[in-house]
Length: 110
Image 1: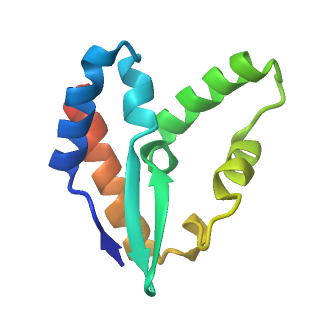
Image 2 (image 1 turned 60 degrees about the vertical axis):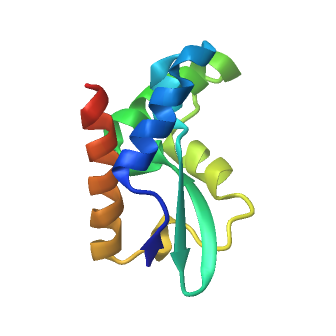
């Protein structure tokens, strides 16, 4: 597995976007992490690797969609649509590395 962005690069991207009027929590949650696995590159959102960010996303989506039933499974299905590989395809070690990356970025802004 290869991750194309470092935590610092993600932090810099979020910092440079703060002045554009988008709430910081959205900039963090929707930051894109590009990952290569077995020669295939796939994009994931930072929130997919952090439980607190996932909870915040679900709360927002329930309000935006008007669907009080919107849950993690619904979000995951939408996120995974059209992907060549999903979070389920990562090994435990790869997943730990991506969770650590997300935690480092989110920790910087807390």
